Length: 122
Length: 392
Image 1: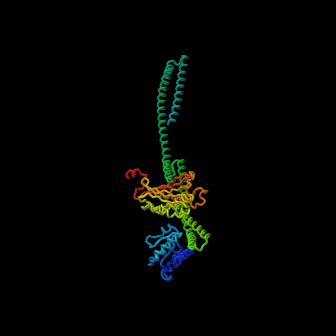
Image 2: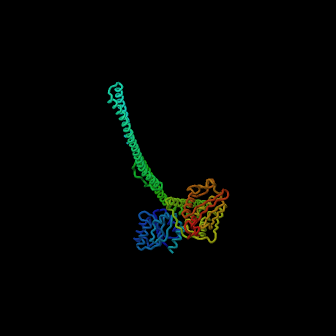
Image 3: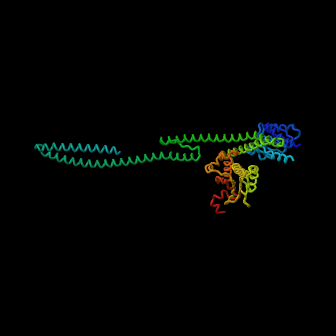
């Protein structure tokens, strides 16, 4: 089963993502911020690397952008989608050199999100 | 000097009259003695001497008077020259501070809030300069407070828009999950969820519009024009709106002139304008109305227009419809879900592309909103420059 790691600082958003993605047939892991994402990936807590990362751009402690930058520096090339509250934040925070597979804005267009996930984990 | 001259003249005149009077008295005494038969030769000599003396005195006084007149005239001339010098000095000392004031006032009016004058010169111009500086300082303070308020407002809109998006995502997302299982819902429940979703979309539009307005106010609303084909843009906007117009049994059609040149625009922004205009036409027109989007070449530009055969806009409202939060007549728009921001934003976006959003409307006939966009590769502002018009 394809595994997706979702990080967002809102419990409700995490529940929404889990519900919707599980309905679409994905296995879902969640993290509350970028710090948890990097720690768990480094410590190999997640049984095998996820097939896709779905990270909120702005989170306390460590943002999705910073977490992804750290993972890329450590050689993790898992496809990643960044979700931002609005385009401004994505524009402002997205470094051109960072390998991101796509940006989505809130509120999430799930048809688009599921399309992107299917494409990136094919 | 003239005063001294006049004083001297009076003194000389006095002395002269005293001397003449004393001469006559001496002569009179001599003549008395002659009449009494006394004195003889000596008295006669005295009478003759007094006549001579008076003649000398008269010569003296006329010479003195001439000298004094010259002195007085010279004094007057010197006085006038002095007064002139003093006066021109006075004017000069007023003129420089006044010129400086005029210059500073001009700079202040032109937006240079740091414009000040050096306080000096006469007490009146110094007072004026100090008053000007005080006024300029107050203006500068007010302007900086206003700038700070504007920044706070922008920050607030940005933060509010950001913070509202997460709960909105949840509401919309869970409602969509309910709709995935609509088969197990009652019709009443389906209708309820649809209302939730409609209102979510409305909130998203409102948030996007508010963000655009805040950006526009902060001068940060920018477009990145690229050569773009017109027909797919219009088809895309029409496709987006078709569901809504069909639900009101309205006929939405597009008529694009064949062979249109590419236009120099940011596609997303033009789509946004078109969706705004079609949404207005849809919401303000009755069931069964027609809405047509047209595109054609006018002069050197491409003109895009959205026309409806709805109720039209009364003249009294026409001049206000581009203002933010202004909506059509309430009686007419009970069911209208717009934000009142669409036209204000659309107009800003059209202007950022170098065009102008125009409206023509007749009550009972319908409305047309139109705007012109530059053709890709054309020199900027082609239509407005005669030199370029001649060249083309």
